[in-house]
Image 1 (cartoon, rainbow, N blue to C red):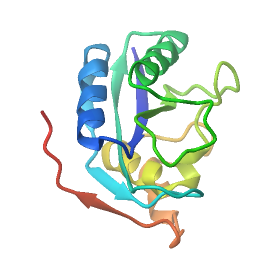
Image 2: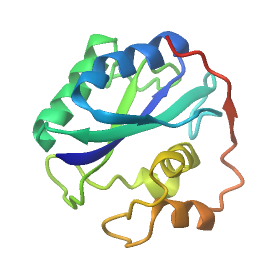
Image 3: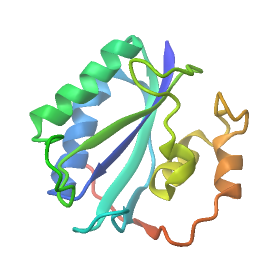
Length: 162
């Protein structure tokens, strides 16, 4: 079993896409934890505000199988990676960490976005505050306490899960 965390962002049909992603991934994660839902302004491009969560737990899937699962869900729900227009995103599912894996291939882990983006770090720390970042050797709670980027605005919202 490997502990995993996934960042999910959407700014198109947000309630539908958040619920659908959790529904589809839930069978592959034991003891699923889901952060509060955050709303955030887009970073580095225009468009509607995003709804963001981090969720995770333990999985029996290999790293490669888990990545394939996330990409297939994104594809199934219309994620267009070829478009330069990032103002509308149905589902952006990013694997943040897979156990203590530090790698560049098949993807870079742990994800750099953990320490760069409040919409990733804050919800990650909400559910895995005591877990250590494998490269930085600090907990996600410590990283949250040290984080300071007032330009990234986000706030928690009430959300009705199906």
